[in-house]
Image 1 (cartoon, rainbow, N blue to C red):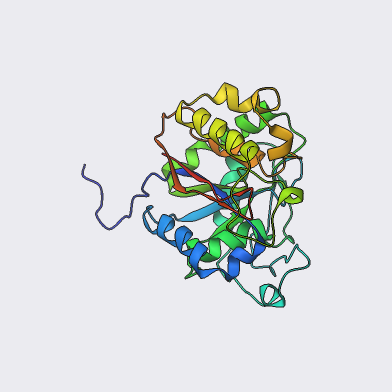
Image 2 (cartoon, rainbow, N blue to C red; image 1 turned 45 degrees about the vertical axis):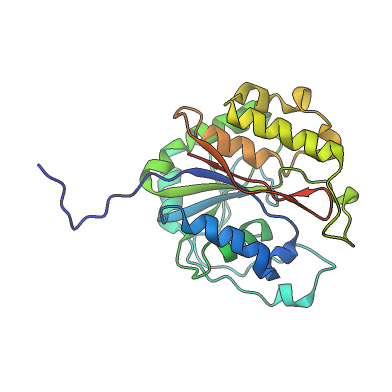
Amino acid sequence: MDPDPRIEVPRRMPTAFVSHGAPTLALDAGKGADLTRWAAGLPKPRAVLVLSAHWLDAPPTLGAREPRPLLYDFAGFPRALHELRYAAPAAGELARELESRVPGLGRDDERGWDHGVWVPLLHMYPSADVPVLQLSVPWRFEPARLFELGRELAWLADSGVLVLGSGGAVHNLGALDWGGDGSPPPAWALEFEDWLRGCLRARAFDELVAFRDRAPALRLAHPTDDHFVPLLVAAGAVADRGPEVTFPIEGFEYGSLSRLSVQLG
């Protein structure tokens, strides 16, 4: 029997990781245009599931499934950032699907989206017409368990959901040159990012999971693991389907803050 042409079949989505940079990205039309262009080249998702470096909680916990005020979880930035709004619908249906298929998820119906969610999405889906759900990153999990969490989310791609890890490919706030956006990246930042690119291109996921032992200049690139580990979940979500790896956004800002974003599949 032929499929009913009136029923829209979800297109398979890639999985993605975005280096969300400084909160001021929300006000930067030039850098934001890179995110808009990237998203415009993807199939439009029926929802986005975001794992942000700014919500670290175990067990993995589903955020609000009804609209909640945004979290302005930063200080020392322009007041204009606190006046921004992002009124996308919350993906309550997706939350219920996840609860039925992924065991052991927590639930926090009050938590709004942190800036690791709304800053990139404000540019990726500026019409705010794609439902959004946040899932916490269980930071204290060992890297292999985070990768396996990604595997538990792999089915989402075939149901039209974009799994988006949000963190930073190189993220050392203490080493930034806030005064100059044209400063060249230091050798240690380039070395770590080159290692990361090589792991992803080669699908060397064992190497990626063992980043604490294998990655060069790790504690210069990531004094803490929080902005790196969302990438492990994103990689786990495509580990069994041989994706093409591309880097739709590249470069550095403030010297050593990587803008590298990754599309898997």
